[in-house]
Length: 303
Image (cartoon, rainbow, N blue to C red; front, top):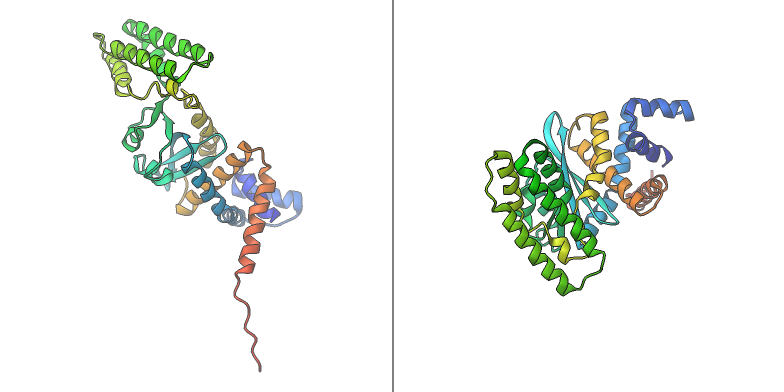
């Protein structure tokens, strides 16, 4: 159990190539392993933890609020996508060849009723109308455009003042009625903003993006538990992005399976304050015990 758990942690915690994992076992424990054996041990850990992976998925499917984001990853040299679905207590990663709305539909379920916090990618409104678009993305983009085009400066100032003002106002714990009134007022303000006449194409594009998400920028005003930014999902992708630079391409479906499973287990356990090494030992040990319990008993023969 220790070898399997340590191999998985060495790969995903210490970011070691399988060859170096094998070297580490020999140096520290006098245990001779090949790089292939280290890979198989990590795959064994993933298979042992897959039931817990599915439990995490079921918990996220029932959540009221889910942060979702995706980033590119290579599968056998071809473009694929690593998706993350994150709540306050669970993180799930899913490697898929698609970046479309079929992925959140598959992971969250067609009848998902919660609110999705996301960026402006078209897959999200194609899947659900219960969205909160990320203000961090919006403000960064508006600031970048304003740095190059004077016409965008008042747009950026207006957005920043609205966001900062709303943050301060929400700290006063307004009533449901006050929230609804503020939502209407701010939405009317955004509608007036996007109707202004501009000549620079980049500024027009920015206004078009604001208009395209007009129904999803202010969800957080009416729903106290909803965050106005998708920082949680972006943070969840940082470690996989670092690993992507080290690992490079995933070779096949087995690599995708291991990658999404181990990443999900480690991230969720850390969110919950649990020890990843002890938890890996637990799931591997439980899987071994279950396998023994279901083993076909030997048939005695007389001879």
